[in-house]
Length: 486
Image (spheres, one colour):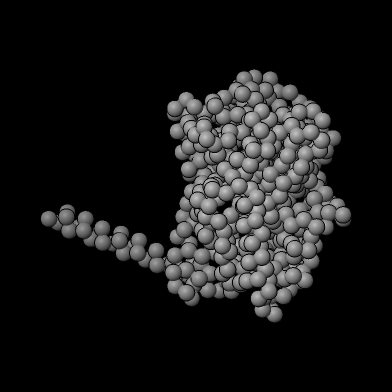
C-alpha cells in the first residue's frame, strides 16, 4: 500500500511538473508573440487559390488564368488598401516601391514558360522552394533553354502573392501543382522527348515525391532525370513541434503566435515572414518523402528512379545535409546518380573561428568509398589557398580524381548556404557582385552591414548569410552533361 501511495505521489508530481512546464512555454511564446510586430494586410489576407481537386482538373492555361485573377485580388485587397504607415519605399506591396513586382518587365512570382532556343529537344519542369517564387530557378531554366528544352516554372499554391497565403496551403496542394506541370510537360514534349524535373529546397522534396509516386501510378508523368538543389529531404527537429508554437494564437490577442517570423517584406520574390503552418507542412512533406523512399526500398522498386543529380552545401541551416546522404543517395542504385558537395572555404581567414564540427563536415557526411553514386567535393586545393578544385570519386570506386577549377573561393566567404546554391555571383537580387542591368530594386547579396545592434529592421544574421554561388558555372556544367549538345 505504501509503495502504491508513493507511485501515486510521484505520478501526481510529474503531472504537475509537466503542466507547469507547458504553462511556462505557453506563456513565454504568448508574450513573445504579443511583443512582436503587428500583423499587416499581407499577413491576414488569404487569396482564393484553386483547390487541389481543381488543380487536378485543369491545365496550365487554366492555372495561369486563375493565377492572374489571384494577383488582381492581391492588388485590390492589399496594395490598394495599404494604410499610410505601410506605404514605404521598400514594401513590395506598395505600388510605388522600387521592389514592387508589378513594375518589372517580368514578375517572377508568377508561373512562366521559357521557350527553347531552336528545335525542342525536351521539356523541364522547375519547382521552387518554400516562401520562394519561380525566380529562384531562372538561371538553371536558361541553361535548359539554351540546350533546346522548353521550361515550365510553376508557382506553388500559397506563394508569390502574400505570406498569408501560406497559412492555408498544404503540401498536397503543392503536389497537385507538380502533377499539373508534369502533365503539361508531357503534352508539350510529346511521347518521345524526355521530361526532366528540377527542384530547389522544398521543390526538390516535391520532385522526389512525384517521381516515387510515378513508379506506382502509370497515369503520372515519370521524369527521365531529376536535378535537386539544396533538397529538403529532412528538416530540423524544431519543425516537428512547430505546430505547438502556434497554440497561443487560438486567443485573438496572441494571433501573432501563428508566425515564426514577422519581418518587413522588402524582397520582391520571396516572403520574409514565415507562418508556423508552412513550417509544419514542410516537416510533414519530408516525413512522407522519407516513408515513400523506405517503402520503395523495401519493395525493391527504388531502382526504378531515374538518375538523381544533387547539389548541396555542407553547411545548411534550413535542411539536413546528412539526410540528403543517408535517406536518399546511399539508397540509390548505380545508375549515374551524383552528389556534389560544396565544402567550407579552407582558405579564408575565418578558420580559427569555425567550430570543430564545421571543420569536419565533409568527413561526417559521406560514407566511405566505394559508394553507389558518384560523389564530388568542391573544395580548396590546399589549406590557406582560395584556389579550388573538384575531388570526384566515381560510383563503385575508391579512386579519387582531382580536377582544378578556375573559380576561386571569395576570401571573405567562409561557406555557401542553403539559399546560395542556384544563384550566380552576378544575380541582380542575390549576387555578391550583382549585374547592374539585372535590377530588381534592391541588392540583397552584397550588403556589408556594420554598425550597432538593434538599428536594422532585420537581424544581422539575415544579411550575413551567403546568397550566391561562386561555383555555379561548374554546377551548370554538371547539369549540362546530362543534356543534348548545343
